[in-house]
Length: 342
Image 1 (cartoon, rainbow, N blue to C red):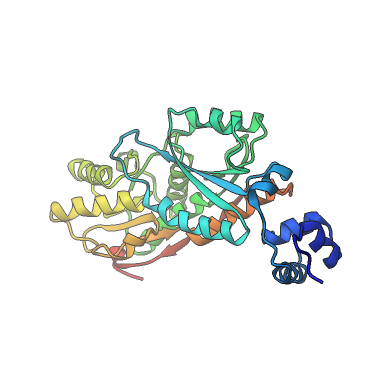
Image 2 (cartoon, one colour):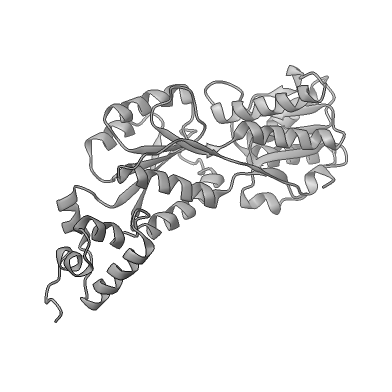
């Protein structure tokens, strides 16, 4: 006989499991065995049971919501969101939905007291942080979150003594892959465009990989072929102009993002330099546009599907009280036309 107003305890009694197991199963938690989850879902369908999230949240003090905090790294009202993060957002949302979590997306400016706001509220059970501007300013806010026992995962590098947990790309190896590929094509005067300061640890790691590849080939790094630039097509354009205006010859460019690389290629084109015949170019990220510019861009791929899944899996693990470790994904070199050879 079916219950008129079934509860999670009714399902637990029939299934022979705990109420906590029922709750996790109905959220598609990875902590529940597949056969147990299937049995509980079948019983719930037979009883016409559904989860009242508001009531469940009052009981468990959880919102079943993950907040994604995107950061405006420029402070300009007209600034666009980094396209790489846009491609990651869809994968985070899909992965969260598969585990029974809603997603709240919030755009933050670096001068906002976002860390205080999320400590004081209960709008989300955990935070995923994308982008950070100058890491030296950002780190203090991470420390404040950690001191408040906030559950959060950072997309980015693993930095010594950094508060919280990170999931990101092995940027140093990616920088090495890009530069090593150019060296194997016979390029010997490889310019670097990006930010090498401690305020940008991801880009600094890519520069470390670039330097390791060059010295490993028996060559010397040339600081005059390094142009500091933050992430935009316009700054990539200006960086390439600066290289061309200098007195150091170069036959290749490794730019630490696709946006910088695309801007650099445009500057080379406008100056009558041919890519890849005169100058080979490699970027980093493999955002969707990289395959469709002319020439198509050789780049280092950060897999946004695996990134989204990894971030969600780790924040849900923290929410569920499971042990979580910081980890770096392996990058993959994607060879296209901008280098001139496979």
